[in-house]
Image (cartoon, rainbow, N blue to C red; front, side, top):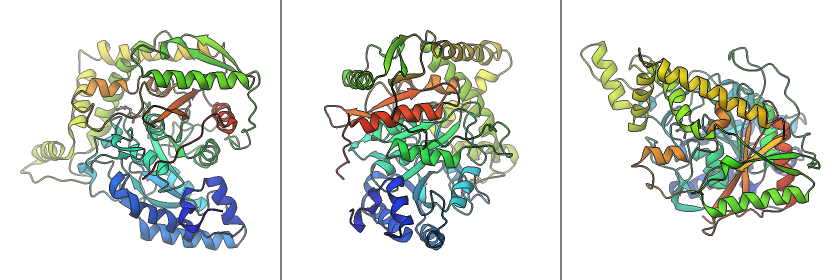
Length: 488
Ligand code: GLN
């Protein structure tokens, strides 16, 4: 049995069980996470804000509910929340100076749902400013360090949420994924992350980056925990008109470990020259493992893959330039001293936004400007359709697709900061999934020679979260990979 100082290492499934049997209390569990944060977060910088007082209050309320014997699955479970989710009464910065003092008066729908289940929020996690980046180095609050190697990045943009789970600062966490921001940091930190189908989970109250691509989802220590959390998050929301009304399956019950006859597509475009050889060999070994469990692998092609990054950086920046127009110095957060409205607007944005955010606003504004719209945005939308069709055709030959999450394991802090294009390439295997609106699961499948986690991605057709979670859980339960806890 874990000693009380190790309660923070439990999975949601284990903790929930022990909470219900009243072997442990939600207050003890929350304390263990808060103590862990106090012990290691000065080295990791996974949290922007730690909400100790609120967390202990929530934990006490959860204990009350638990003692009544009728508590939902997440009652008393300590979670980290990416600082892009509006949390009522708790500062929400999006890791930007422009929102440094913004305290939302309301909860995002997902936060309200978790609150209603009795979950405990230990704090708001670090990220790239406005979710723009792949390393969490574009944060106005300093970078997050990778728990497996403090000289390396945690990935991004949800780097804090991934690092916090890997370092056992919380049992699970929430992130967002526009082009890879859940899957890439999950891969770099050796945890599980799922980007659901576009529209599966409400985005109401989640600060918008690129609205046709953004989707929210969980980070967890196991595939089962990700399934439990996703079930609580998913479902219709009258406040988000894009949110699907499709019924939400019981994802945990879908975890039958059965993969016999499963057809796994292996896209030839995703095993490219220049990728780290250990990443390729580790994903290929996972495919062999699936074959030994009765699955079949089939080679497939996603011929328009090479256009994905270019297409994404038109669509995402165009949408970002529109979404970020609201930070005008009048309505939220920072307000620069100025003589008139125009100066107020200019100075606030000049002082409040970081370099990468400014770069994206300029790119996006250009792509949408009169005379260029057809050449850039319209063309990108057409390419996006071709990318979506590639997947539709592939799914006639296979049930799921397995790929690496990223071409390399976690890179060194500072290594890619001077060259935005190399940074953009970290998302080469994740971005198409957002353009096509599909669900994608990231999970550990091995380690490289430096002891750094390697991530495997399982992609499915729209609304096939149950199938990709089942495939991931089967691999996890096969015991093919022994997870390594970071030595902090
Ligand atoms: N790295 C990609 C970008 O910078 C994706 C980020 C994300 O998914 N939010 O846009």
